[in-house]
Length: 426
Image: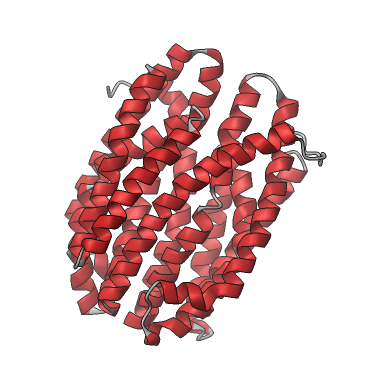
């Protein structure tokens, strides 16, 4: 297992740079959480409420990346670079439409959205302002998403890594300046993030339009075949991602109803959990490209690479579990100085650490299924797991109960994914 093979080199050439890009995105949220936590319990609670909402609003649009990546990879693998180039333009067009729709919803319905999260009166005002600021970054996020999709489709995860690390650095520098230096508090954190996202989007758009991705860029009249394939894959992945993020939103809403301390602690734990999960998801990104290309040319090689990626995912999960189990007592203090929040968050750290091997296998299986373009199955399986988990969240009366429900979510995803994997790849 631990002897490095040529298969491993193929995986790492995509996964290691993808790790940098994937880790940088949640790192922005972790940095925001750490700085905002110094402002007190209420700003951190407002950040937690809005972060859950943004997960729901933003991540459902990220399906554009997941849908476009295997379609572009398959076109490249089949030698049809003209079709791959057309998919770039179609993806940008679809992103523009989604950005206009999403921006209208966020800016127009911000107070109602915050109310739906069950935010307390002392948190609501800051949460609405922060949500509206962050909403302005949606067009940039969608442009960044298309950039990631195209580069992953052509098998280049290094360039997106550099861009994502750059925008994360911009955010990290601006956060303390705007939050504390200018005295803008939580709003300053939002402005820093949107500024960084805008810079990243500008770089991606320049590279896409000038053909630096390796695919010639051209605006073409939307073709029904391309748009229907993108929309069909996107709609199934939309349902899948909506169900996943809605579950985390329901968990944040349930935590908010328990009190300000509880939702602040939940925010800290969720950000650490997502950071660790997305780090392992780098292997899933490699799977999206490698499986999509190999299924077009060599099914046996696709199976061999898939088995290898599952093995590496489990190993990474074990390593992360061990490291963060050792750090479980000190991690909450990195994000807030409020002792009540630290104590509540510390009680959730064992969940964060112990679930890493399970999460790792689930995410890699998810990436393999996306590479195989088995989108409808992913939507159906996620819906079943989400319905069960949301029911348990409603019944939970404590933070621990909410987090046990999230453990059930991952277990309920594992079983159908594993059975489907055996059927499709083997």
